[in-house]
Length: 203
Image (cartoon, rainbow, N blue to C red):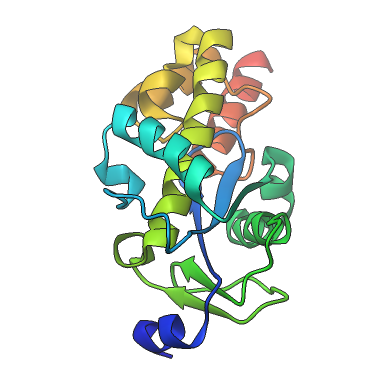
C-alpha cells in the first residue's frame, strides 16, 4: 500500500526503528512512536543526520508531545542465541507491544516486518520519509548511546563513547589488546576471532 493511502485510511500510525544492528557489543534497541498530528514536532529526520545535542533535545520533545512512545530491546545473549535479524524483530515486537495506545497501523524502517498484532508495512529509508519512524530512530539512538556512555565509563580503554560499539579501527584494536568483554556479541566474527586469539595465547 502507498504511504499516502495508509495515512488517509488509518489514524493512529506507529513508526518503529532500531539502533544497534551493526555494533559488536550490547543490546539492539528499538523504539515505537505514535505522533500527535495536533502537536507537531519540527526538525524530525533520520537520527544519524542530527547532532548529538539536537537528537537529545528532540528526544525530550518527542516524549512530551507524542500520543505514545516506548522502547524495546534484545540483549546480547539473545542476539548470540537467535541471530541479529531475529533479535531485531523481537525488539521491535517488544517496543510495539509496550505502547500504551494501540496503533491502527505500524510502519517499520527497513524491508521486513516483525509478526505483530496490527497491520504492518516495511518502508525502505523510512527514517527519512515517515516522521514517526524518524522519531523512533531518535529515541532508540539516544537510549543506546546513553548505554554506550555507561559502558565507556566502566571500560574506558575501549572508546565506546566515540564509536558506540561499531567495529572501528579503534574498537578492533582494543578487542585485540584487551580482549572481549562479557557484553560483546560472541556471534559476531571480530569478537569470535579476538576470543580465539586469546585462547591460543593462553594455551
